[in-house]
Length: 103
Image (cartoon, rainbow, N blue to C red; front, side):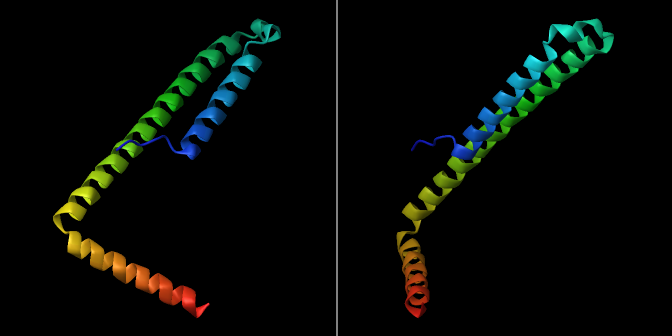
C-alpha cells in the first residue's frame, strides 16, 4: 500500500517556495545594504522561513502517517469482520440508491 503526497500539500509547498524565493530576491537587493536593520531582518526572515518549511514538512509527514495508520486499521477490521463490512456497504449503497432514486 503506497500513499502519495496530496496535491494541496504539493501546491502549498510550491507556493511557499515561490514566496521564499521572492522574499529572498527582495532582501538581496544591494540598495538595501546601507540600512543596518536589513541584515538582522534578513536573518530573522531566513530563520522564520526555515521554521515554516520544517513545520510544513512535519505536518505533511504526520498527515501521511495518520492516513497510513487509519488505512491499516480499516484493512485489519475488514479482514476480521468481512460480513459486518459487507453489511455496512450494502446499507450505505441502499441508502445512496434510495436518495438518488428520489431525485
